Length: 185
Image 1 (cartoon, rainbow, N blue to C red):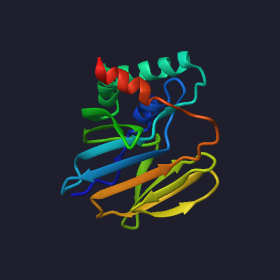
Image 2 (tube, rainbow, N blue to C red):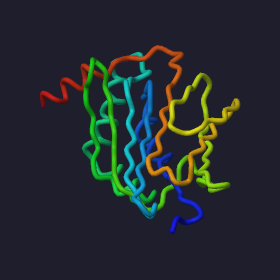
Image 3 (cartoon, rainbow, N blue to C red):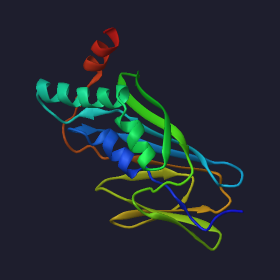
Image 4 (tube, rainbow, N blue to C red):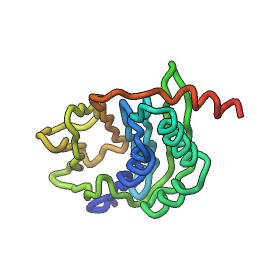
């Protein structure tokens, strides 16, 4: 039996992964796949084209060191547990001269954007806060206003996803040279 509501709690992990220092990303994708009875599921959160907004080399190194510590350390695993996610894998990789990162795991109850996913009229609804210039791709129906995207899926949909595309309106600096150096160590 499908319970009245599910909590999706990834906002804290998203913030902790990408908003350390002055890290930016071009695109973030959240994918959730529920099991047959919707009692648990798998989640993957990916960030594409991660850069630093720090102009100086020292700031960029600090940003990359914080990002590397998240990949190599235990904080993200413990933070995930607090939010209901058993993080199974954290990755950082280079593809097409862009730095990308992701983490994935399993969950029973989550909380996304600190909001409850509501069930109404056989639909699941959640509001996602929006920044100026954000665009969204999703398999949900979208109702958009100046502050939020409201995403609406059929209650029976087991695979839900959305992708936030950011407007980068400031200079950003590649972390690829630091990533390459780290990979050689």
